[in-house]
Length: 348
Image 1 (cartoon, rainbow, N blue to C red):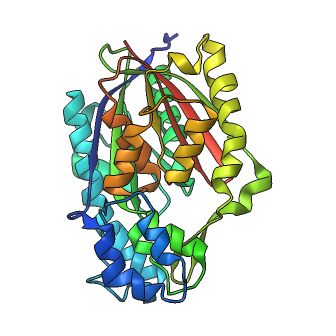
Image 2: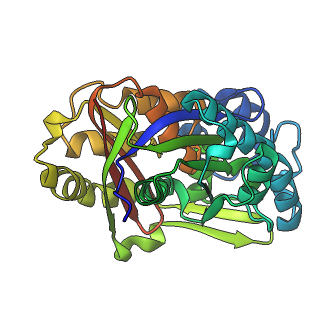
């Protein structure tokens, strides 16, 4: 019988489409006219906490994107997602010192596109992974998908004793919607950017983040506060302003009681916080509810400022900035449900 191995994150990387676009330029040269019927739109963009975003679709150039049908958006998704994902995975494997042929499982999380054969198969083939590599597609979970994805690849590594890769890839700019005065749509368009991020998990290897535990909570009463619906014009996100307040109710319980207490840990023992920057208000709520010291979420604020909210990829990009942090680290993300997922990591 095989002995379970401790899963360890040994490689991390991300890849971005194109050059960064300033939030101010996006507003002045596209969104100001696009949201002319929403009187609060300018304030929402200005107070987003974002300086630049990377976007596959630059609406200043491809200004007809709001009129595209879903089929055209999906064609563009598969054409551009494959090379972007391939780049992120290749860089993560290189940072871990592994070859594509060494990978036992490739898991891909994405909520911004669909294709069959999918990204997992196409990327595995183009990178030269074995034709016996196992694959897992984690679809439509939204911003928190990186954490259960990390749990899945970690469980595979622990039970099989083989390396695994998680790729989170989101092209949110493919879903710019037709003009509207709905402020929930304004918030969504002011926040989201595009990115791919990958992590490599190996069995029982020193020198990386041990994946210690997972915790989750879903409040079904608030499911309607965050939705991601397939329409004839791509996928439409709806974000209620109540989301930060609703998430605040479960943050303390999930982190303190479910994740840390079973390991004899307290909030004060945590050396690093990789919190998904779903927006400034969410980061403020997390810091307040957990009584975090000033600067504890600086990596999250920096990623939000430089890239925006890149859905499931974002928390891995924050974690990459903390990869030299020694001691316990908490990675946490939020999404539809409303759902909160958290992982306890430890770097010796």
